[in-house]
Length: 294
Image (tube, rainbow, N blue to C red; front, side):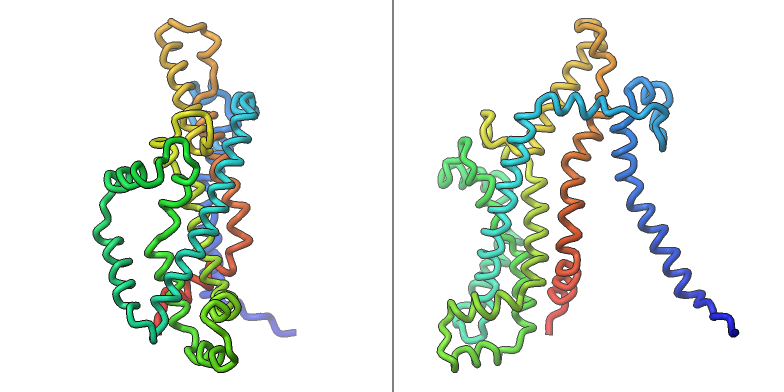
């Protein structure tokens, strides 16, 4: 029986990517490890790859405020889902309009979109517009609408539309389809990989959104997860600071501040790790097609 020849280059490539995956997983393991480590162990010996006495104390402190945490999760999910849907519809409709070769103003619309990307007004201009137009004081719309349109997302979808045969639109016209039927029944289903890519990018953008909630949400209403965890962390740091001066009871000296930091990171990062696998196939395909024009 002949021995199967080992493909050395292919083996080396597999080993390289396995090592690369381990390197990329290392920060996530650090988050888990530190969040399960007691404050005494961190103070005494610093970070360890495997905690000597694993504990859920950090998560216990966080989940003592269960109602605000669940409300923040609900607000963040609502904002991310609604914002992603609105953003996909806005970007795809704009991209479809710009990709239409027989539309006379498509070059003007493309120039306006690119102009806003290169010459944006910055946060000051956005703040002035939001205050005067959206009246954003504790208004959930200010967490959704400003981030709905992105030039980069529009370009990804437009590149996909440009790669589709224009004969599809002409055939739809011959069959009596109007622009709405062509857009919703033909173009959008074919652009599923690009739409999934943009949906994932928008979802991550809204999930990590922090500044809008910080600037416009003064009360406990519509507090996003990022803002809530930051406020909780500020309170922990405040208490620890006074504990170090002896002005607060010594019980708070054992408060797992570092473990709580990593637990907070886990609460924000790990949900996205469960979302990405469902979009991975479309995300890779959409980015590959959207990055090549012609």
